[in-house]
Image (cartoon, rainbow, N blue to C red):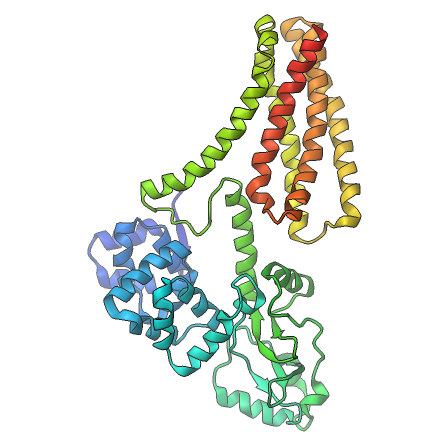
Length: 455
């Protein structure tokens, strides 16, 4: 599929940009590249082979470099930072940092080797050092690590007229500014004034008269997933990050929350295949092979367990070779039933809609679905097997095995993510592998075991 990227004025393709570069029209390529948004420039860089990235990066203007770095995956960003520091030292990064939001700057700084982090921070101006220190004091998967310290604060005792004059003097408001925070001289947080209310208020009114009490205060130690849920439930554009002492530390904006939601969706898909969204798609072959080998080895272990289950009934298979043809049907049907339940539970876990009070009911519901699907599909498959092999024996065996595996698959699919979450293991990472192992082994044992008993 041809990779596309949307410019501010028109639509271009990665192939078109590559064609311009190959033609040697460097100025045209620079103008074309910098007409894109930083996130789109990052897409172009990540979509390009490694031997072309240096050329594309050198065409990016200083104005766009900071935000482009913030949008890149960790591995690609790390490679570009290494080259940037080799060329211009930490001063080059300090220049890029001037126009960056604090949260984006923190992401970039944390991508550096440990021996360069302190040196790079010292090369920043005092204001950026203070902003950065506040964010870096929190883990990057918390609200504190996500927040931006660029806030507009006002005292409750000033008038609307004074506040409006102050905002006009700023000339430019921070991005995603929909509210002004009300604090005292020590930054103790009292509430906010929405820009909408401010514009229609009487200019003689005090800020305290139009201020709104904030019911969506974010604790700096709150998990980013919980932050995203609050923004989703309350349709927020921005929210205050306030510590336990009531001091305003910064704010979180909806653009950062969108990134969280997107990253969580990417993680859910890639983790099921043992991959990481931060991996470089054009990483060296040996490096990519090493990463995938570990996951393939883990899957090999599960395959050996399934093979061992089959080996127990070697004598039965020798007598009724047809059973070997039917084994994949039982295993795959149970696996699909389990994956349906697994995906459903993982989706509702992500939105915090599953807890102790409703998990038992959900297990009962999924087991009931497994029973009904078992009755339906065991009847259909048994009839097909009877007409295919002209054997009532095989029809009864596969019907019973299917019934068992569909029920076990459904129960396992709903139970595994609940158990893994209790053990602080990501269900997206381990759930699929464990579920496949369970449905394969139960499927093989039930089919061959029932056949052995009936023989």
